[in-house]
Length: 68
Image 1 (tube, rainbow, N blue to C red):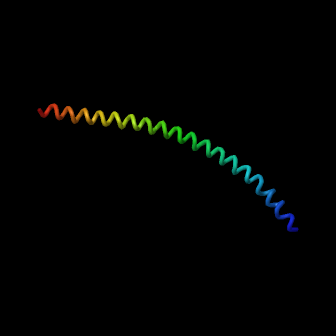
Image 2 (cartoon, rainbow, N blue to C red):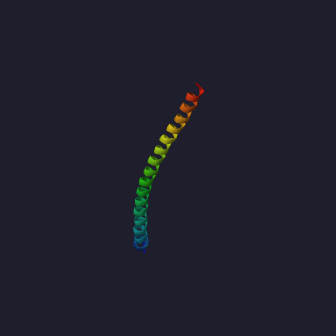
Image 3 (cartoon, rainbow, N blue to C red):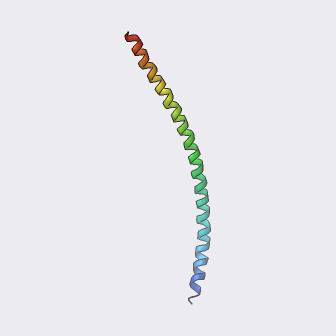
């Protein structure tokens, strides 16, 4: 009867491993897509940061020029 244990484990574990591998593949693809989108958002945030810095500098220079 000891020979039956590995067979039972293979019958139950085999399909389970196949399902887990498919889920892992989908998860990896989703992570790659999320990383791409995150890079796009980071680029847009950097552009907005630069625009805000320039705008703040403009205000500071405007105030300095009006004080004279």
